[in-house]
Amino acid sequence: MAEQVRLLGVGGRLGGVVRVPGSKSIAQRAVLLAMVAHGRTRLKYLPDGEDVRSAIGMATGTGPASDAGVPTVLELQGTPPEAGVSRVRRWTVGESGTLARCATALAAIGLDPGGTTEIHPRGSLMNRRSPALMSALESAGACIDELGVQGGWPLRVKSLQPPEEILLENPSSSQEVSALLQALAAWPDPRLLRVRGVIPSEPYVHLTISVLNEFGAEVHLESLSVDEKLFHVKGPVHAPERTLVVEPDASAAAVALAAGCLSMGEVRVEGLGLDSSQGDIRVVEYLKAFGCQAQEKQVAGQAALWACGIPTRGVDLNLSGEPDLAPVLVPLAAAAAKAGHGSRIRGLGTLDSKESPRLAGLVQGLEACGFGVRAGASELILDPGWNPVADPLLDARGDHRMFFAWTLLGWVVPGLRIGGQEHVAKSWPDFLTDFASAGAEWVQF
Image (cartoon, rainbow, N blue to C red; front, side, top):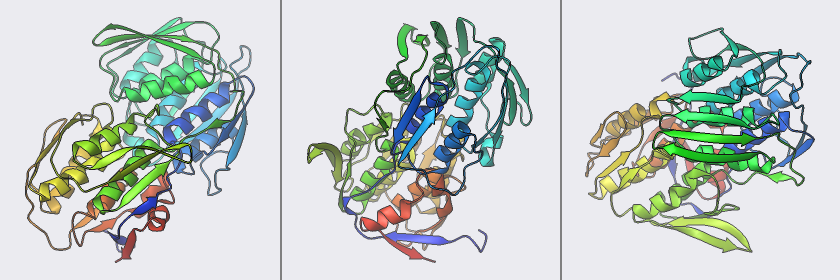
């Protein structure tokens, strides 16, 4: 590890309210829909992370994410697709796979026919691919010139009006489905999206549909078989009459709730309830599976999620719908292993295609800390027991969620040193400050 990288150790007991950012997933979808909506969209409580700043830069034409903070309230004037207008655009999507896929579909079939858009990534996104999405768009007639890796970014895309039906086969990510739904909804005529193959992380598709509904689009899902679905899409999208308030991020809330349990504290995240359309809200159910206490409470008439209690048993969980929760739940499984309880976590087949190879990283990190762990193509098995290692060192490897994972593991493994704190800027720039305000103690090495 390079000398300039700062190392942290974690301690303290979290208590009370933990502030978490707004939902990155909702924010990115809302910003992109506002770009092509009729009217002026008013958004409140957008999170101030690099991914959302990149989306705002696309929508406002200001370019790459800057150091300027995201305003509390953002207003965006939409530009619906219009025949006979051929604009030239250059978008920078940062390191966000969601933004890259949604921007690609929007540039191909959701903008003015004949226009040209260049889409540029950075970091690990330059090595990631989306072959199913590219194939679906090219089969629909879109012209996509690859400027980098085959099937990935950067790209140059020429827009066209979409056909009545698009076929997406064997998607590697729910983001591919979401991207096509949003782009099709920019048009006023009914269109169909046929998906053949299992949709990974499907709850995110339902999240996309809920945001589309906020913008007046109609989406009806017809399940034709176990592995074939037909989405009926009817646009166009219109700016919501009311201000669209972005609720707290369920993935970030999961980190906070798990930290409360592992630190032997008691925390709550306000403004988020079990009726949220975010799939990661299931963290409440999974915490209970470990023997922790977790539930929704009402605080001053507002929903809040609450959790406490250390893990008392192992689990057998399928996270195929919520793979982003794996870095949160694995430290809980490690705590259970210390107490003599093994765990099995399944449905992790998409983890190694994220910002870092997360499944491999989790296994290596646990081994470095003295745990007995095995992994298959899509599962992680953590054996009961623990052989302590003196002052283990783990790095986030450029991945914000891996830094969150090692932070949580720091309450399980005494003396754990963690590198890569700078990567939280992607989704939660104030992570260290927000946790410190709730009682976390950071030790600088």
